[in-house]
Length: 203
Image (cartoon, rainbow, N blue to C red; front, side):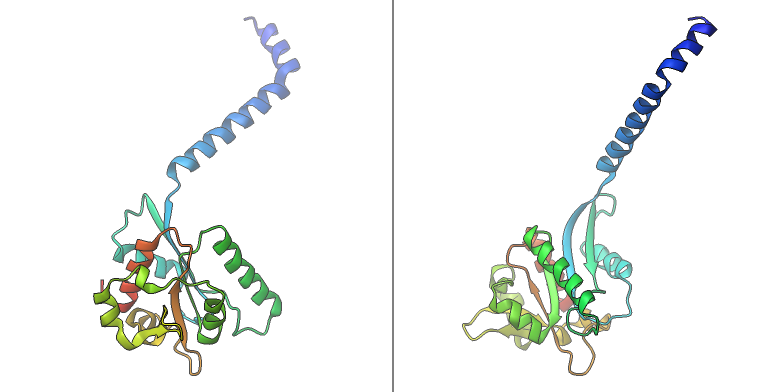
């Protein structure tokens, strides 16, 4: 192709060529992102926990404790949301919306809340009976840390009796007793159970 031909071609087709290059670049980026995206094997929300530990540190500690390959798998621990201990109604609504959306999309596996809120959502069927994910030995060792409902379900574990929670300073404010439970429609029941054992230092 002669120089004049190249100039002619570019003059009349430059926008199509540029558009094609943009599409190609976007395709390469999306393909790379898909190939490198890590699978989230555990999603946790700790409402009103007032810890000074950054979420990234919590996630790193948990990932190491579960023995996960960081190149392939990820965990998510959200510890900054509040639905009770906040004067901002809009922030509480935003936090609650996140909670409900994550349950609806079957994304959330484990949740911690102040006891009064935990009872409210447990009454609505939000939390799994822990007999469905923890064996008798673990339940026996947890003993008085278990929250047993009036109908005999074991719906949660008191945070102040979980060494892992206390180590991170979660729910240690006076009058702010927390409870941790497994969401009823979790897709990662085994990982959720491992997380509870990790908090109880029973793994």
